[in-house]
Amino acid sequence: MSKTVTSETSPVIQLDGTTGPPLQYTDTLTTEYTSRGGKFDFDVNPSTRPLVMGRSGREAQGPAQAPITLANPAGVPPEGGNESVSFDVQGLPAVDNGWMEVSVSWPAADAEDQDWDFFLTGPDGEAVGSGATLANPEVITIPDPQPGTYTLRANNYLGGSETYDWSGTVSFRNPNPPSPTGTKEAWLLSCADKRGNVLATREVIVDRGEAVDVGNACKRVKG
Image 1 (cartoon, rainbow, N blue to C red):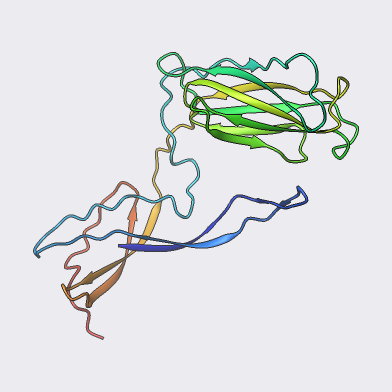
Image 2 (image 1 turned 90 degrees about the vertical axis):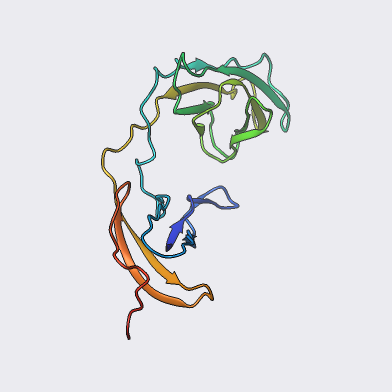
């Protein structure tokens, strides 16, 4: 079973900080099954390629965590310097955070005169997100954040001062609910012998989570 689709990246941040269009790339998915003959069932993992929005959700197991106001450390680091603040993210069974959003803003006369950049690390000390563009506010969105202590590092990239200091909040929301309906998927079913000679191919259209009887899938098609 195979599927070849054209997928898109997220919008691409250009070198000058502007946002460009997504890039397209070819994506091929293949699943193989070996049988000695006779009847068989072939289970294929459903695919979200091309992307199927809203079909990967789940039921919330609790409320989302209450918002957090970030405590900006006293003073302002010099231009090019850094300061950091930590905050705790809870988990089940107390809360079910499907999404975490860190939003940081600052007063500014011009984005090219006052600019802060932000870098977020997770409980394991690994980087999980950043906001390092010319946007104000800078927003970092994390799906299904792991519980633990996170650290936000603020870099005074340009012009940060007591007048142009930053403030921020962390907000949470429940996971996207699951979609009650599937979506049709088109696959190419190919049957080959032990030598790799293709005996037959056919297109299979099947709903996600459903089954379809393809009959004698390996019957050689005369042509």
